[in-house]
Image (cartoon, rainbow, N blue to C red; front, side, top):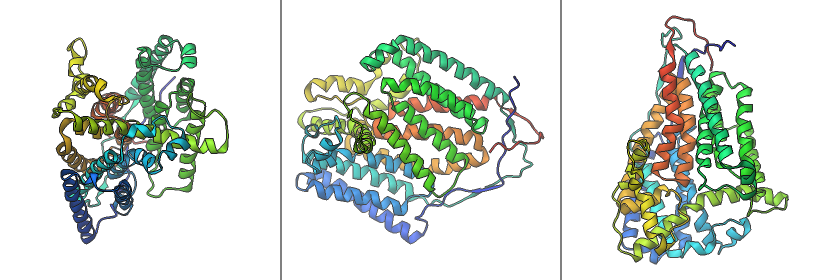
Amino acid sequence: MRIPMFIETTETTYRYPKISISKPQVRGIYLTSMFLVIILTMIGLHFKLYLKTDLSMIYVLYILLGVSNIMVTSRGITWDKIVGWSFFVYSIGTPLYLLTNGGLERFLGTKIYFDEVYSYVTVSESLYYNILFICSFYFAYFLSPDKAKEYSKSQNATNKFNYFHSKLFIHYWLLASAGLFLLGIYKINYMNAIVSGYSLKNPGYVYLFTAVFAINISILILLRMTNFQKKYLVIAAFFHLLLFPLGIRQLTFTFIIQLIMLYKLTHYQFRLRTRDIVIGLTGLVFFGFIGMFRSGGEQTFSFLSLIKSPLRFFFYETTFNYVSFLKCLNLFKEYSINFLYGKTMLDPIIEMIPSFLLNDKNSYQFFEQFIARYSSIENMKPVGTAHLLTELFVNGGIFFIFIFSMVLGFMSKFLNRSMWKAIHTNHFIGQILFSSIIPFVIIQLNRGGISVLIKLSFQFAILPIIIIYLFRKRTGSTKAKNIG
């Protein structure tokens, strides 16, 4: 069967979103406010004002800081939203458990219990660090003006490409990923796994998770190449439906976000339509419905349980690693522990080196070694792969949190400019690239550290895009076929 050739072209003119804080006087007021909050937060941490202030007062300040982002954030899909809001929402759950005296935990039925958050003092201190991170990030992001630019290109331009070879290769990629998926199903003994639940101790899950990530990315690429042909959605649905009986929702949730992101970047609109909101709420309810039938959750179907299930999913996912940060705060207070001083930043680089080249890779997993060393003292589990704030604190305390958040702010401004330029001047590649990476960033800012973020983004997002670049061919003066 002949695979059609898909040729990339560009639109004539595109203007990427302006930020709302474009007026110099408004921008100056906001930057000044952020700078003052940064200074006051550092003073509060230095003099331990969290010992004297009430948790509710600090939490109100934290909420006001988040709500103020609405007035200054960029329109559309922008990196200040992706990073700023992702980092803001992840830490909401635990303080709310305390403020409601555990009532929220009992209402939702989550597995992160009220007793594990230790004290109002510890949570108040943690919110100081959150405020410092968010203010430093936005201060750096808005420090340089964001001027709207137009990227224009003639329809007669010669940078048109034939994606026949890329599409052919991705089909082989998909076939190999499907084989790895079946191997994982065999290794975990699928029918027994449905009854007993999944365990990451079984190496078959490594094959399974890797295969699903690879399948997701190949489906995204093929969907964009074929202008969203439904047959590829059917293929994706087949593999993900096999995961549901195992109780694995994160992989499917990531793919749905990637799919929505790709569609929005392909058919970009500034305004959020009512249909988009309805689809989003339907998706959340669907995941809540699946969650009701997992072990440990409510088994009785009711309208209230259906509403509570997505909330339980959100609070559990965002609270899980926040508890690790609270535990590290207590651990550093009670014991003389040296900072790692950036050693865990090497973890993702080491992990990408094949084992036959570096036999003792485990000796470079510095954060895992840290957890193992102090797990008996402070019950460091659940920690998983440390949340970003935990990892920064363990590496270098308040100094690392401040420096990294500033660097992340500057990087986000650069990415924001680059994203829209890449989407316009090379929109086929740009749309796939950013729709693949952004969900990983959102999830890892809420649930993981630097190591997992970099490793997954490279292996399952950037690498296939590089493959497309390698396999496409320039067509010269060939008449373009607009696929977007």
